Image 1 (cartoon, rainbow, N blue to C red):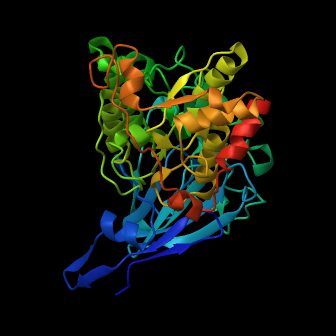
Image 2: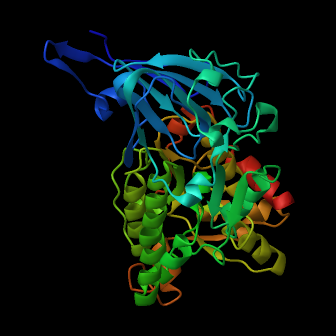
Amino acid sequence: MTELAVRTTPIPGLLVIDLPVHGDARGWFKENWQRQKMVSAGLPDLGPVQNNISFNQAVGVTRGIHAEPWDKYISVATGRVFGAWVDLREGPSFGTAYWQEITPEVAIYVPRGVGNAFQTLEAPAAYTYLVNDHWSEVAQAQYTFLDLADGTAAIPWPIPLDQAELSAKDAAHPRLAEVTPVPPRRTLVVGANGQLGRALAARWADRSDVDLVGRELVDIADPDSVDAVDFSRYGTIVNAAAHTAVDAAETPEGRRAAWAVNVTGVGRLVEAARAQRAVLVHVSSDYVFDGTAPLHDETEPPSPLGVYGQTKAAGDQLVATLPDHYIVRTSWVIGEGANFVDTMAGLARRGVDPSVVDDQIGRLTFTEDLAAGIDHLLAARPAPGTYNLTNEGEPLSWARIAAEVFSLTGHDPSRITPVPTAEFYAAQGTAEGDGTVAPRPRSSVLDLAAIEATGFTPRPMDEALAAHLRS
């Protein structure tokens, strides 16, 4: 009896699966699709939603070559067929062909964009296939076709095509030179008008496969807005949208808004990514922790103090249910737009001597580095999960950072007055947790070992700060 095994082919992603078949005088039995065993053996998690059977009554029936906008898992229940596949995807393997007989002991995993065809060698043949998207007329309009007799693919059909039975439509498909390659699925960035969205736009400015949409086009808090998006076009979704008004989230209206975006809206993106088997990149926050640990790693359970942190922690849990996801946890984000560094620089220029809290410790994260880290994760594709990402360097208090800003802009850093958080808010007649001010974690220092182990090291914070102020 054959052992379960997954074998590669010259076409990237096209896999041959050897299936154990148990038989005796009564007949045979096989586990045609067994998710746990097959994924463990190296097969992608297909996630089938539809099971189709093509029953072929006569030897010589030939069908194809069709490249479809979904992945397929092919096998036969009875009979024997000759299968042929041609890579019709854009890229260096375009036009690569592979063929093999399929019997009950063999299955084939066909990734989207790879043209598929078969010819019946032993009839009747029940050719079965699982697919991970539902057929529709809209989906069929996205098929890409190739002539069965294309000379470049040079498929050695066991039964010559002039003696085979095929439809007039299949016989009229274009030759390879006339085929428009299937493009890779695109990347969608939601929240493109925010600080991170702008940094991603700059990072990916030379890419033609990225769609950046602001809230005016896709508002994840609005179900109708999300439902209007055709997510089938996207293999990657980057969620740069968030409700980040930390103090406003403590108010009744702000609490509802924070949950609508950071939890319910994130849930909509999670389900869209799940339906399309897309990778979802989601940005998390140091506010998911209470700040009592001096250093936070990715294994620390959430312990949020305020509403904003609670909504971010809840959104993270939703994203973590996806098999293919990256939660990028960051802190103290600085980018294009209103931010702490630019505020301090403005105060220095105007002659204002501010009091700044000195008992909250962390590292800045410049959006250029955050965007670079996201780009790295999507290119390197390490194990899915959570990765902390801030700038490198010695953790500092807000007061120390403010003093650095004053110094780097040519002003006296002693103009900064360090004060405890409680005193800072007391001077304004407020207090953390009073319904107008969110409680802050005292330590926001994130352990960077995991992302650095993937090959990405962010810039030192002092270097990034100086570069930001120069620009």
